[in-house]
Length: 443
Ligand code: PMP
Image 1: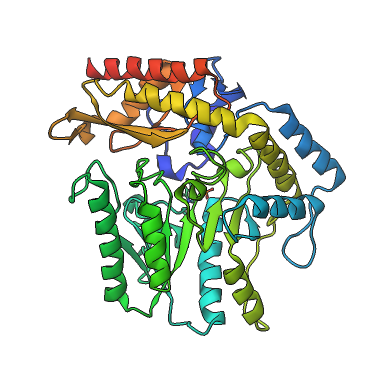
Image 2: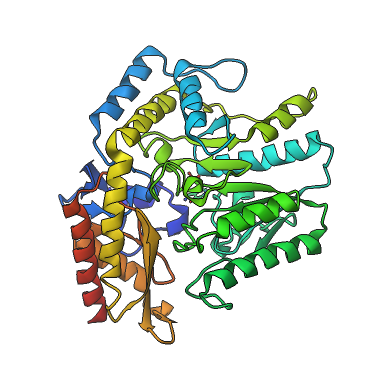
């Protein structure tokens, strides 16, 4: 398999000749929070695949829901005026639970095309209300909004820009709220004030009547699990309202119980104009994303749409099998999974905080089942681990050998996003194996 993978399967992020080190690691089976590789080595999946298998692996009722839908009706296009019962019901159930008046749902295949779709909807909205000059977009440093070309431009990670002239000239960035390494210090009020000032200044610089939308993740995921201070989302949402800019919350990671509630915006007490989700929506069993549009945004687009105004759609939008899985996963969230995730999340955060005294741990942060520790060689100076030593790959490899899958970011940040079904023993195992891995890294 390793040889076949090298010869034929492309993994762009790992490099095109990929996996020179040990070769691809092939997973064979999984149950609950435990994954087993092709050699029979079992590990706790501390990252729920790629922050997505929230329900855990091997849930029979999800498999049954997919099989039943495949037998009954495997496909109906959501492109034109056709549909399926499962997609319509899922849209209604989601609208019922989404914050405020986010009552309109557009289904995609994942997060990147959900973000792309918001860019389209935002532009259609600005056209429909007679402000087509509002065509500029702002997002945050350290933000991740997908790897499609448009999404990659909103994403702030340089790896996704090189060679494509990205970001586009209509895509702008302001600094992140990153508390551990913020030039304004770690005081929450100062961080919020700096972000608000940066957004105002950027809008002024671009042109007060030019900015269409601002994008933010409730917690920045791929940028290193950066948690904004309490009240940050609310403050940014308010400025956007004041400046007549649409506020887009990217909940692709934070949605579906990752931070506690079904949507992180609920805890923030905000209603965005648009919201993107994916991952936990179907818990990784089948691909699906969902864009939520507020009544105002949707009605403006729908009322203003001329003959050719809205050209957008995917063959697999609103896929009936994905929707059937989404309905079952939603049922599971409310039948105890969210509650278990909240309990396990408190245990995870307490466990990770107990590692604070480890000589390598500079920062511990997170909310619920979304967390990170940031490693340093000197706590007072916050000196990052030396990049030349390739700490992330070595730590990832060691953790794997110790029976733990984590995300090791290049910057020496270890990310945690376990399935919400984790037992106490799973969480304790994550902490224990992390400590073991850090001790070995110190040696
Ligand atoms: N937005 C955010 C916040 C994400 O974390 C991701 C994926 N990690 C995406 C968008 C893109 O989602 P996908 O990989 O499903 O295309």
